Image (cartoon, rainbow, N blue to C red; front, side, top):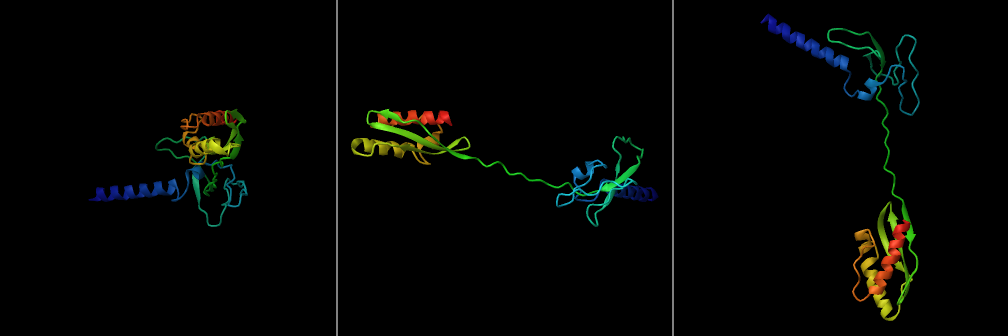
Length: 194
């Protein structure tokens, strides 16, 4: 019975000592690994005063706890103790960075002449992704205008085939082969410039 009581008491004491030496809850690993000579940063961006001649770094915040730590370069082996110095246990400030915003730009292909007139294609890119395409200067009257409308309806816009395929490898619009071919040529040149 006595041995069990001593074993439990010893276990409780060693667990308590480990918790105390390990640090208070919420202490970050970055704060534990900071060299003693490095001044901790207080909220607001200024550095706290450096270590005092006695080797104790003043706390960066009122009421902050100070804990012992091993000296830099000291090694520990089981059963030995190293001398310890104290330092502030303020957590390192967290920095957040947002991802760079994709730039939106517009690229216009050359004017391509074909049997029914001429046209050129303008694409809008967000980063390297095509988000919109449109044909410019396409014929508006008669049969040529109808063919142009068919090509615009199939290829152009934010939900057109150009945006869906992200290339100039488009299917030819039936009945508008010349217009489709001219559109694809101007589109490919715009993609090459992008």
